[in-house]
Image 1 (cartoon, helix red, strand yellow):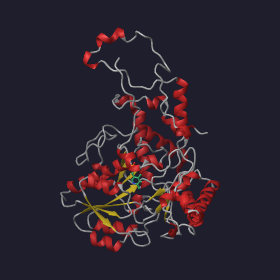
Image 2: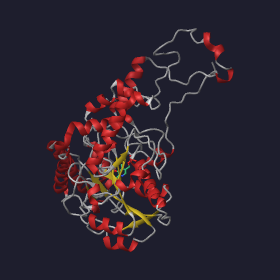
Image 3: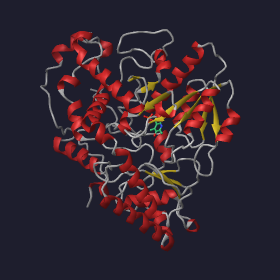
Image 4: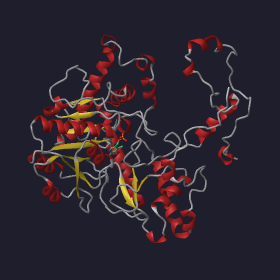
Length: 479
Ligand SMILES: *Cc1c(COP(=O)(O)O)cnc(C)c1O
C-alpha cells in the first residue's frame, strides 16, 4: 500500500513533540519584549514526533513528479538540462554569503562575473550589451518594452504606442505590453504556421513601437522571412523584440542580433541551467543593440546612469545564484559543445513527431525545430480529448506535454523532448502515446476517466488556484 492511499494529514496528538527547548529560557527575556508584541496564543503547530514529521514529508515528496523522476515533455516552458554540479557551484559559501549592500571593493569578483556573463550572453545572441537585473521572463519582457518606449520617447517620437504580437505568441507577450501601457495588435499566422507578412504590412505605420516575436516560433517553426520582416518593421520606425525564453535551439547556431532583432530577453531558468517551477528563483536578462545601450535599466555594472535609461526594474542586480549557474553552464559546455544542444533537441522532436503523426493530428506537417504541436487524436470521433490523453499519460509514468496552448488549435498538444533524452526514453514515450490512441478507440471511457493510478486525479484547477489551502490549521489555544 502506498502512503497516499491513506492520505493522513491529521497526525497531531496533544502533548507529543519532536523537539523541546529548555523550560524557562524565554521567561528571562519577557521583560525586554513590549507587551503589545508578546504572544498570547500558543504557536499553531501540529504536535508530532520527529520521525512522524520526517516520514510525512518524505512520503509527500514521493508523490511528486519531476525531471529527476521521469520524462517531462512540456513544450515551450520546457525544463532543459540542469547539471547538478552547477547547484553545487552556486551553493558555495563564498557565493551564497554575499550581500548586495556589501562595499563594492569586497565584491569585485562578483562584478567580474556579471561582466563576463553579460559578454558571453552578448556573444551568444548577437546583442551589444545586457542587463542581468530582471527576475523572470515576463519581467524581462516588461523591461525590454520599457527600453523600447524610452528609445522612442527620447527621440521625441511620442505616437508609438502599439505593439504587434503574432496570434501564436506566448501569453506573457501581450500581457507585458499591456502592463507597459502599450496597445496590443495581433498579426495573423498563415496556414503553414509562420507570420502572415501581407497582413503585417497592413499594420505598419508611425504608431508602431515594435513587434514581439520568437524564432523558431511557438509552434516550433522557423520564420524564414525574418529578414524581410525586420526590414519592414525598421523601415516604419519600429523595433524588433525577441522572446528568447527558449533559446536552446539557436545556441551557437544562429543569433537574434543577426536576424535584425533590437531587444531580447533570455530565461536563464529555462535555457541556462536553473530548474524552474513553483515560482522561482529565475532570471530574465535583457540584451540590446548598440543604439539602445543607454536605455538599459539601473543599476549598471559600470555604475553609470546615462541619460535616457529605463529606470529601475529591481532593487539590485538580479538573482545572483541563477546568474552563477548560467555562467558555469556556458563555461562548462564551451563554444564547441553549446552548439550541439539545438540540433539534438531538433532531432529528438522530429523523431517523436514522425513516429506519432499517424495517430495524432499534425496540423502543420513540416520539419520542426525543438518542439511541435499536435491537434489532438487523429480519430477525434471517439470523444477523447487532449486533456484525457494528458491524464492517461500520467498512468504510464510520464508528465503530460503542454496542452491547449498555443491557442491556434482547439486540441493543442505541445511536445518538446529536449536534447538530453535517450532514444530509449523517447521510444517508451512514443509507445505510451500509441497505446493511448488505441485505448481511445477501444475503451474511450477508461481514457476519459484517467488517471487511475495517481494520488490526485482530476482536481478542480480553478478552485485550486482561487482558493488554495496553503497552511495547516488547528484551532489556536490560549497559553
Ligand atoms: C516561459 C516563457 C515566458 C515567460 O517566462 P517567465 O519566467 O515564466 O515569466 C515567455 N515567453 C516564452 C516563449 C516562454 O516559454
